[in-house]
Length: 142
Image (cartoon, rainbow, N blue to C red; front, side, top):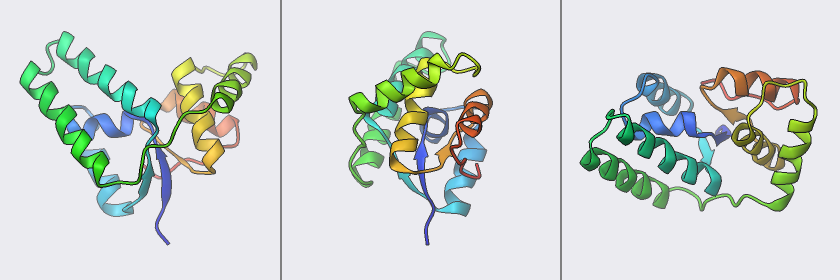
């Protein structure tokens, strides 16, 4: 049975733009061959990450546009986007209110969406991984 995992932005950006995790992201996809759940929130965060790479001059405008276009094509071949719900935001807030986790709001939202779908989290973000484990969420073997 194929692995079904929730993909956070740190897994997807390296698939479409230069990043320190390029090789690791491709290795995960080729060895695990996961069915990835990608939320509308992740899509927005990916666009933001590419815009930041453009502002930081890590990508040219043409490269950023190409990365977005390639991502859109890739998404068209996958299952539909997973919608972020009000319940996801409420659960993310509950995680943040614990105050014992080193958790940022976007990471809490990703964790909540993965929890709702019962899917392990696929991320390269160590801080988010630690928080996810503390919240009882499984991690994909990235």
